[in-house]
Length: 262
Image 1 (cartoon, rainbow, N blue to C red):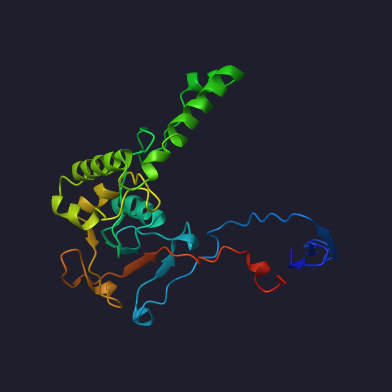
Image 2: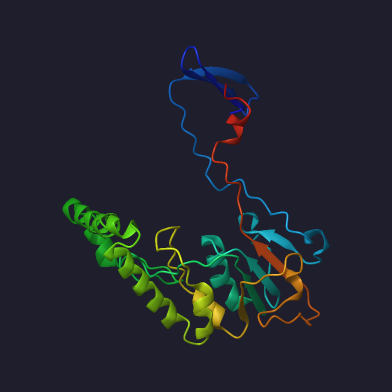
């Protein structure tokens, strides 16, 4: 699809399409246009001051390469959204040093449905999979999952008993997972309510921050990330330091529509 233009008079979308195999061009009209190109595919590396002076490799989470070997490297992960949390948990066991830079605090939750979450997959057992061949058993499983995840709306309201219960439970969970470095708790627990922003169970994340080769920075030094370690001292290591970050364009309209809606 090369262009999608809204026809105000006819109330239809005019689409311009190119066949990439035959190079044929054609157009047609539709009443409804659904885009499925993904919300997070337009990744962007932020323009941090001093980034041009950084001498290591800069790689975005959405621009990953299987050939990118982090073994025995000093790595910095910037950002504690879902991608940053997952990167930190998965990279820490593989790198020589991992420093995580987080501008904001965030809740690290257990599964809000009560299910345990781990870094390793949690597959259905063979018996469970076999039971799904029976329509009534499969429907019952689906209803149970729906009941756990979609009947807790009261917990989304600030200061509700359910929301306050989440706050107390999440703090206790975070405290337990930070036992090796309890001083990190105050740097991580937000002042906003649970569910104010997207929750993530973050299996392995807090544990990664408490390991000897892991560190959390909340008072960052713009343009100077490469030179600081988790103790606030400058790196003296001579090996190359790598930095990863996770940020995306926030504009949700598809790029092909950006200039053509009228």
